[in-house]
Amino acid sequence: MEEQMSDGTHERIIRAQQGDASALAVLLQEHYAFLYKYLVKATMNPLLAEELAQDTMVRCMEKIGTYNGASSFSSWLITIATRLYIDRKRRWKLEMKWKRQEEGVRSIRWRFESRNLEWSEVLDALSRLSSVQRMAVLLKHYYGYGYEEIADILQIPSGTAKSRVAAGLNQLRKELSEDEHREG
Image (cartoon, rainbow, N blue to C red; front, side):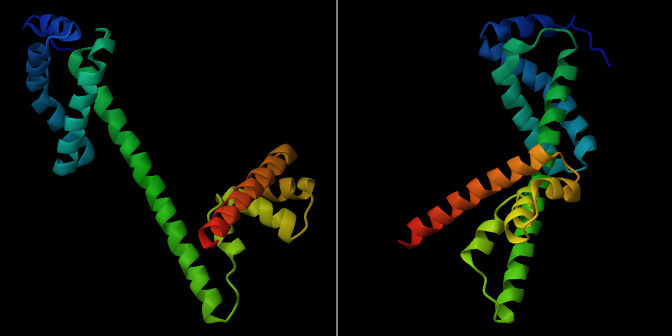
């Protein structure tokens, strides 16, 4: 949807890029409803759409100097809004993954403790590693596999297996030394 810039939009963009705050305010006001309606349809959530529209306007104020006219101004705003929404969804997905992982750790810990099995600080520290590092460290140092075997099991190059073990061990050392400092 190409907009016509004969209505003064082009002039307002230029003035806004030169630091004219009132031109920027008018520009944002003119495009807010259009942007909000797009975001309601994209998110199917009016409250989130409102939040993203406001975030988009802030980003527009920060980045107005980068607008080059290659697309219509409204398309530029939609691009910013869409990227903000995708980033937010990505962050939510990651937070949910962490939350599920944390719940899984609590469940395992409860099972250990309810059966009078020891839940050590090492297991606690292991639980904070990424799953790929945790598997590599366990296979190497708990189960005694070589790097080639770990690579075969995890279907990764042996160099990647080595680096995951090394990174995991470094993280474990860091976690365990931080635990000692907290207790000491």
